[in-house]
Amino acid sequence: MEARIYQPTKTAMQSGQANTRLWVMEFEPEAAKQIDNLTGWTVSGDMRSQIKLKFKSKEEAVRYATNNKISYNLNVPRIRKHLPKAYADNFRSDKVK
Image 1 (cartoon, rainbow, N blue to C red):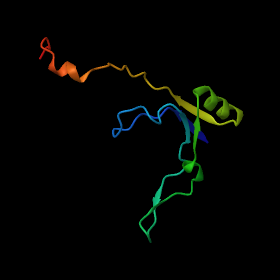
Image 2: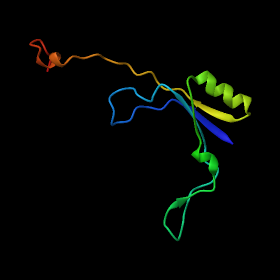
Image 3: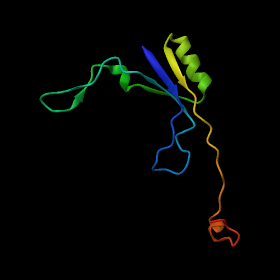
Image 4: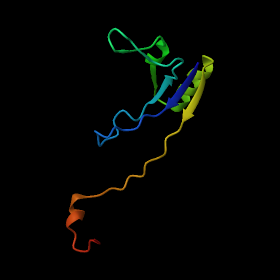
């Protein structure tokens, strides 16, 4: 049983940083998903793939994994550099083209 601890990235459909502050722990799938012949739906017998635990900090997630003897991979996100811009900068006279 292996878990992945990460901080989710923002989706392409949002400009803000909503839902990116929490740390998430998900379990890696133990078995491949299969297609049901009758319905055509994707099925899996792996119940752990449905579990997604959220934590306020990286330390809490790591502590939970070590206390419950869960091996984990920690994915630390790269820090995004924010360059503040103003709409008025598009109309500056000294703008370099």
